[in-house]
Image (cartoon, rainbow, N blue to C red):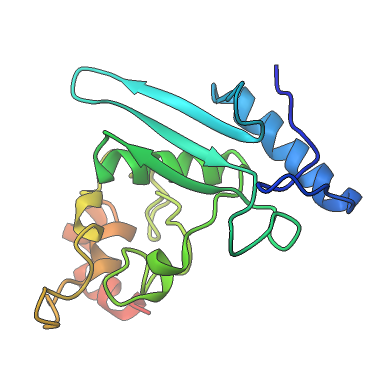
Length: 182
């Protein structure tokens, strides 16, 4: 059961009813997909990841940040501990699909070595050509290192081809995929 508090991370009250309703909706969506709210930190949700390969936790924070208060952007920020980047990206896609509205940090989306630098938000995990669910087919690790090496040289990775198309479409329609590249 969620116990959201009508407050920002720093304890200031949220007066905007629209923001509060968005927070409650996101909280209910998170609860539906087995996230739990922290008892010590209201509005902070987490999911323990424990399988044969990984043991860690993913956090979904609906408290705002020190830079952006929750009333400026009620979408939750996400972070993780002790799991792989690939597992984290898969969870972000699932959060997006379940209307939990995760947002990315400035660094992730706006810096050249941020993993979402050339993407328009969080990938959908569906093939752009045939619509197949590719969340478990894509090597999401290709995003982790960014598009440039430590010396600033372009790695020459076609990110769009790698993460937006299924294996069959890449094999059967290589020319179409090159034409669709943004």
